[in-house]
Amino acid sequence: MERYYQPEIECASREEIRKIQSERLVKQVQNVWDNVPMYRKRMEEAGLTPADIQSVDDLHKLPFIEKDDLRDQYPYGLLARPLSDCVRVQSTSGTTGRRVVAFYTQHDLDLWEDCCARAIVAAGGTKDDVCHVSYGYGLFTGGPGLNGGSHRVGCLTLPMSSGNTDRQIQFMTDLGSTIICCTPSYAAYLAESIHERGVRDQIKLKAGIFGAEAWTEEMRHDIEEKLGIKAYDIYGLTEISGPGVSFECSEQTGMHVNEDHFIPEIINPKTGEVLPDGEKGELVFTSITKEAFPLMRYRTRDICVLSREKCSCGRTHVKMSKPLGRSDDMLIVKGVNVFPSQIETVLLNQGYPANYQIIVDRVNNSDTIEVQVEMTPEMFSDNLSEVTAKEKELVAGLKAMLGIYAKVTLVNPKTITRSEGKAVRIIDKRNLYKG
Amino acid sequence: MTVKQISVFLENKPGKLAAFTKLLSDNGIDIRAINIAEASDFGIIRMIVKDIYNATTLLKDANYICSVTDVLAVEVKDEPGALSSLIAVLGDKDVNVEYMYALTNRIKGVAYMIIRPNDQAKAIAALEGSGMKIVSTEQLF
Image (cartoon, rainbow over all chains, first blue to last red; front, side, top):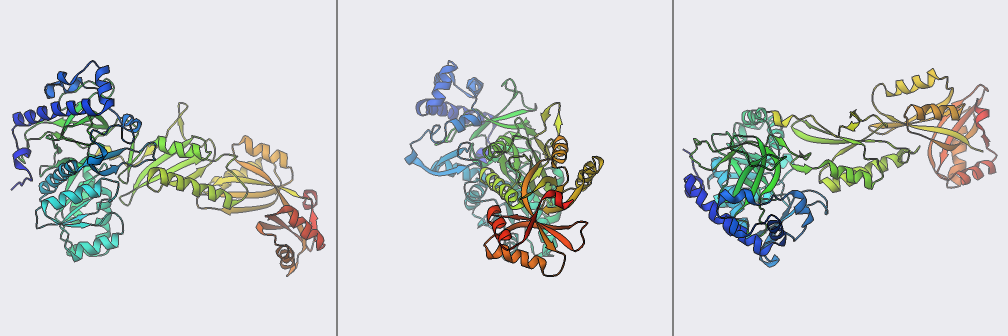
């Protein structure tokens, strides 16, 4: 039987959800008008005052905001509460200049944890479960989000964080983990490691909640079969809160968006026009309950489809498809957002030409990223240690910028593939959006 | 007196060295000595050729990254212990050897060490001070 963490809202009638959304939206618009100069300016430029937004039907009138706005307003520009009301910061990867920092009041954290708790309960979680959280802890939202949700459900929570597979498996067998939360690629890696160690029969897992990167249906079946679990997808982004913006139910035909907190829209990425349900376009979110860091019509760059068809699980919230692609050139590698422009910045800073190629692959279910750079006469020396020292410096620079290890390969000049004079910058061999 | 060495960047992939040597062969480049230093994904070829200008022009035209470095060619007797005495001379004067390789030529009983010291002037002084013979490119051919 389907269980819910907050059934009164998760299964509320569409009319009720609309009513709640409209009330909260009107309040939020007034809030950002009063407290965030950038929103007020944007609304004024669009000839709007809070009085123009009376219900969700008026949402489309508001201007969009984009990741660049978040960077421009870094760090405090979008705060809608005094800093003294904030209790937490989370952040996306990137250097200081490009980093996005999100602030949370205690109330924001409570609601975020509720969202994650809904996802855990939808995956069958109860207070009798042992919830093994192998997402990274720290500025990354994965660990803290699921950790909080697990507490709310009352699970025995194992804050494992990522890495150290031996220890992960030991805790899993010794403490009888029943729910695992991690990236799908790490789940697949764990599944293989468990088989290699021959401890599959000592594993008590029944469900997994996997997100922070794209994965295919084939991967889902593979993980489900190898671990004998049901694998649930979860979606989120730091800007909006973190994991738990939407989550999968037992039907596994899309992720229910927590609509009482986040209003999703699908737009044509070129024109900004709102598209009807069922049409593919860019996903846009408005956070209607966020206190510290409310985002109004934030363009996620994820390409998705929304569906309001009745779900067999009983939840009434709209479902979004897995992201089907990106409307920009962002890559997600090992759960970390990577923009080619970040790599370009490092190369230029270290005196390399901006002629490079990024090759992303998945080897043994783990993402790899390789940056091929063309060698220049200036970087070259007859002394091997000088060249390798420069190569190491580049690896360190990329690690500092991206937060993950990227292999560097120095190649001969003019060997990087070009098409019609324009270099092909990214080769993603994972084919993640075709599954 | 120094010898000019050409250093070339080469990717560590099958066929790359073959293409490189074929280019030299097709253009009649006479290689006197060659050495490869390898890192994981690339290598550095170092070589002494007869016509340095022709060789570097050819390589640059073919999009190779190369550089020319002054190195020392030191004559040693082709017999056990000769290398050891040569290195001892440098070590005694605190000269560090970055890399080196050897060649022989048509003169029987004589070998040459190509040496890239960390301090060229100090190395020359040390070698000359102990009566070692530093030779020119011409003498290698």
